[in-house]
Amino acid sequence: MKMITICIPMYNEEDNLVVLHEKLVELAEPYKGTYIFEFLFVNDGSMDRSLDIVKELTQQDSRVKCVDLSRNFGKEPAMLAGFDYAKGDAIIMMDADLQHPPSTVPKMIKEWENGYQDVYGKRVSRHGESFLKKGFSKLYYKILGMFSTVPVLPAVGDFRLLDRKCIDSIKKLRESQRYTKGIYMWIGFKKKEVTFEANERFAGETKWQFKSLVKLAIDGIISDSTAPLRFSLVSGIVIALFAFIYMIYTFITTLMYGNATPGYPSLVILILFLSGTQLIFLGVMGEYIGKIFMEVKQRPPYLIQEYITAEDDGKDTDS
Ligand code: UDP
Ligand code: MG
Image (cartoon, rainbow, N blue to C red; front, top):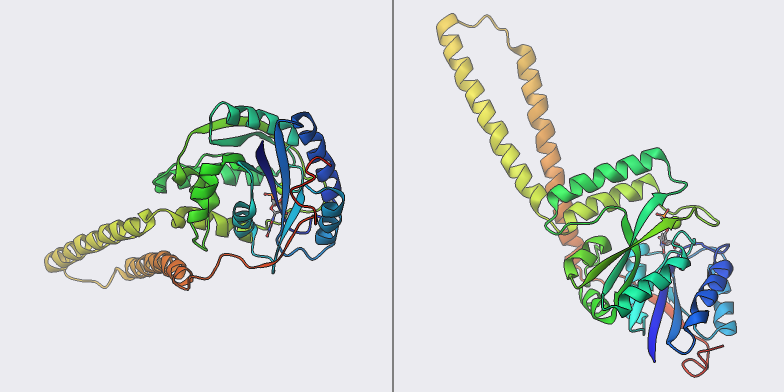
C-alpha cells in the first residue's frame, strides 16, 4: 500500500494541534485500505506546550511522528527536515494553524493519482489579511517575476502535494539559505494547480513579522538570480555616462560664457545621487557575499534533538 505523509512544520502552535489532528484523522478515514497515512510534525523549537502535545498524540495515534529540531531554525529548514524524514510516496505540506484547509487534500490526492507530481494549492482569497499585506504581496511578485529566471507563481505557497521524485530532488538541494518557493519551480516535474480558500488562523498569532517578510522577499530575488548584480553594473554605466556628458557640457559652457560659480546645487545633487547609488549597489553585492559566506561554511540547514515515534511504529497503522 502506498503511503502519504502529511508534514506540518510548527512553531508555538499549542492551541491548534489537537483540532488539527482531529481533522487529519477525519481526512484519512475514507482512505482506509487505499493509503497509509503518516502525520509528521516538525517541531521548530517551540517554546510552548506544542512538543508535549505532539508527544501525547504519538502515544494515542501511531501515525503521528515528530522531528524535534534543536532550536527555532525557521520554516524553510523545518520543511527540509520534513522532506528528509518523510517516508511516504507523496508528501503534503501543511501549516499547523488550519489556514490550509484539510478539505482541499482529497483534491490534491486525486490529481496525484492522475499522474501529477507537484500539486500546488493556489489561494483564491485571503481572509483576515490586511489590505496592505495583499498589496505588497502583489507588487512583490511583479518585481520577483522581473528578476527570476524561473517564474514564481503568485498566491501559491507551501500548501502542496509532492511526489517522491520531487521530494528526493528537493533533498539534494542542501543550501542553507533556502527559498523553497523558488526551489519548487526550479525542480520542474509535472505541475497541477488546485485552488483553495485560505481560512483565518485558527488560534495563536502569525510568526511572520514585517522584518522576516522583507528578508524572505530579498532572499526570493537573490537566491536564484544574479540579475540584480547585472542591474547594478548597467545602471553604474548609465550614471557614469551621464556624468561624463555633463562634464563635457560644463567644460564647453565654461569656455564660452565663463564661470560665475553657479552649479553648487547641482554639485550637491550629483554627489548625493552618486553616493546613494553606490551604497545601494554595495548593498546588493554585500547580500550576495553574505550568502556565499553562509553557504561556504557548509553547515547543515538544521539539527535535530530527537525523532519521536510510537514504539510499535509501522505495525499498527490503522489505530
Ligand atoms: N513556522 C515554523 N517556524 C517558524 C515560523 C513558522 O515552523 O519559525 C510554521 C508555523 O507554525 C505554521 C507555518 O510555519 O505552521 C506558517 O506560519 P504562520 O501561520 O505564522 O505564517 P502565515 O500563515 O501568517 O504566513
Ligand atoms: Mg498561518
